[in-house]
Amino acid sequence: MSWQDIPSLVEARDASGTHKIQLSDRFQELIDMVAMRRGLAGTDEYLEAWRKSRPAEREGSAAEAAQSLAAEIETRYDEIRAAALAGLQG
Image (cartoon, rainbow, N blue to C red; front, side, top):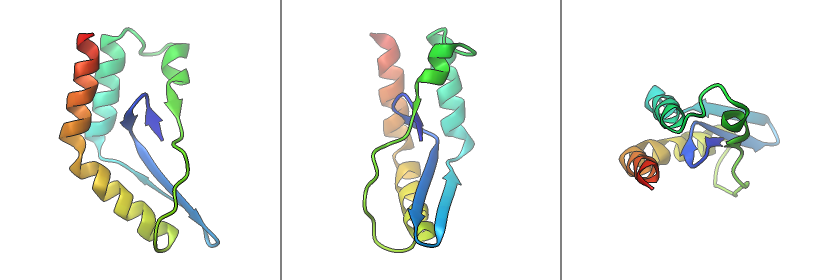
């Protein structure tokens, strides 16, 4: 799950159920900062900016897939942050 293009939560499903992993607090802090700078905090527009990504196949169980994807996203934080802040410039 992402707010605009900033991820917040990883969710994976398989026959045994759903596994969710909340990304580190720095992602939510980035979401809050960008939302405040855009004047969207606490508005319907803020809520409408949340969305789920398209499903994608991954190897392993839901837990393994979620952990793997969350780790990948965590390593990309600086790139995600830079893109979000660049979006504030325009």
